[in-house]
Amino acid sequence: MGFTPLEVLVVLIIIGIISVVVVGRSDIGQTDLLAQTEVIKAHIRYAQSLSMKSDRIWGIRCNDTGQSYWLFVDGDPDNTNNQRKLPGKETKIVDLTQFKLTLSAATLSFDNRGRPCDDNGGTHPIQNDLLLTLSAGGGANTTIRVTRNTGFVP
Image (tube, rainbow, N blue to C red; front, side, top):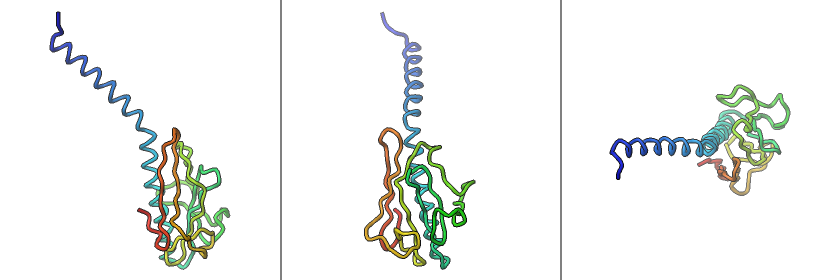
């Protein structure tokens, strides 16, 4: 008593389809985490480039709950008049809850030389590399490093 090649082939195809569905669904959260990490890095670089091109202080602020962040100019990041839209975004505030992500609370500004500062006004350069953590449900997270003195974001 044995199996025909056709029966074996059908079983292998069914196992393959089930495997693709299971693996595909398990990586969705990780994909959003990695993609949004790159977007936030690009937004930090954008704020730095604006600071170097103008004689103004630009920065990124993440609120205390870690659910949103925004681009700001000229000091007070919580003043809606100082908030600006980031490239590719419809609103001034980027909502991370749509991706089920949170970002560590921080204010990062850049002086006119592009040096990262930990105050709103771009007057207090960071003394150590700044580490921002982007977290997804289930314990997955990534770290964004902003290098002191240069503002390099690898």
